[in-house]
Image (cartoon, rainbow, N blue to C red; front, top):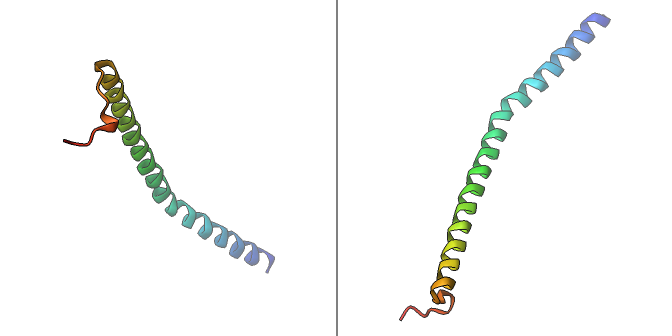
Length: 68
């Protein structure tokens, strides 16, 4: 009786852990997506920073440009 209860308890724990393990790839994929977005944003920021630096060095001010 006690052995059967322990077996059922352990089976329940195994099921819980299996469910958590199956969810892990989704979590890892989400983290990878966030890392890629961060990388793209960092590259865009550095590009714009360099463009602004170049504009200041050449005496151009694009921030007040009206497009005319």
